[in-house]
Image 1 (cartoon, one colour):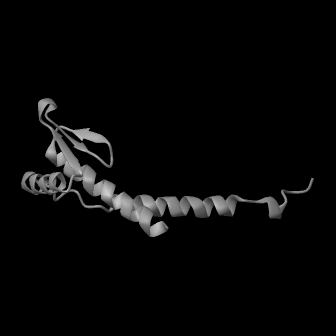
Image 2 (cartoon, rainbow, N blue to C red):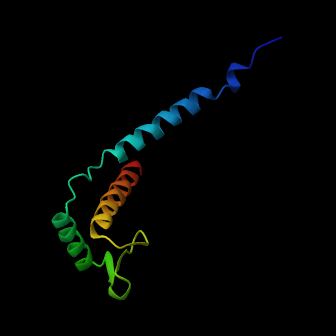
Image 3 (cartoon, rainbow, N blue to C red):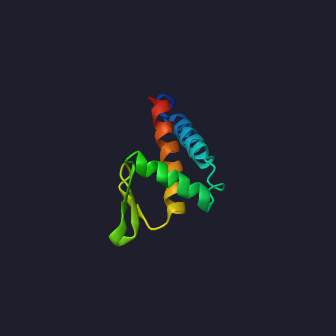
Length: 96
């Protein structure tokens, strides 16, 4: 019984694709968010509000990250999210 046709074997393509995806995941995971303390978060959120990237909703006690469409009740969570969102967007821009 003959083996599989070597010309139809796409496993090497899949393995290469998987390696690229893992490398991108590692790059995105390298975004440092551990240094986001309360003061840093408050400063970043203030800058984002001034730049119309974040909209405060005082009656609901939330901050809405407009480009991401996500609401947060903590400035620290918002700051960490924004750093990750920015890093992901930058990684996408590098691919193009």
